[in-house]
Image (tube, rainbow, N blue to C red; front, top):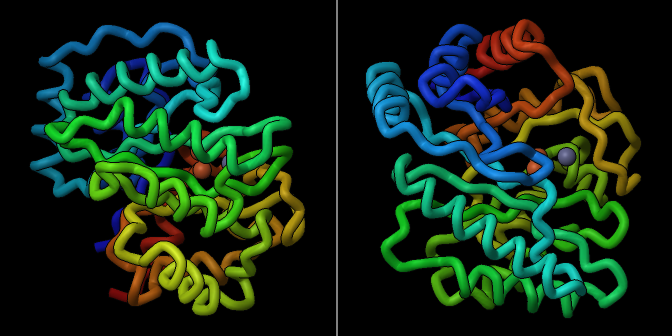
Length: 277
Ligand code: FE
Ligand code: FE
Ligand code: ZN
């Protein structure tokens, strides 16, 4: 079965997201751990989480994916911004233990003017501070488009981060199709070549999740603006190739396209219909 879902609003709670996922034909989903702009997280209701876990078991859900807020910048030159990132992410990971064996994805951040090397050191330091051996969550670094001074624009940068983390077996990668295309990895014309690069530099066994997004901008634009599947510069075909690729077919896929629920339902149906396994 194709494991696919989309980004859902967490405002109505955990079980509500599970029900919403079922309604649109999804068997997984992504959600923000708190308001995407940061702020305080809602208190977790253990009963609500239990209900979601029950629903997921009954309906054979794939692993779900939590997304860190956009406001955390683990590699800021400003010490208080980095301290804030550590505080928020450590708190998120503690809360994630209510949903054991899920994924927690975050953007490596922007180094602004200090250079990628300094930024990468800060990210490694953050991860070595917040990762605990007993944690059951897999932490994923997202591949970035290279907008501004974003870190994580290349497989080499991501590998460098992974290599510096003591508990790197708790880490993995979430590949965002719009981001890698905007970053200059031509998955439209050479998916196999890009996957070979990924495998050589990072290792495909580190790829745990894929964000499926078309791009509003052309190849290598370093922009990061998502488009509906098939309506952007990437076109539909590459998405059919990705979900059916023998090395990717079992990975959970998450849509972050500009859609309401009905639009997500249509994209999920289109991709399920195109799935050959
Ligand atoms: Fe993201
Ligand atoms: Fe993404
Ligand atoms: Zn994006």
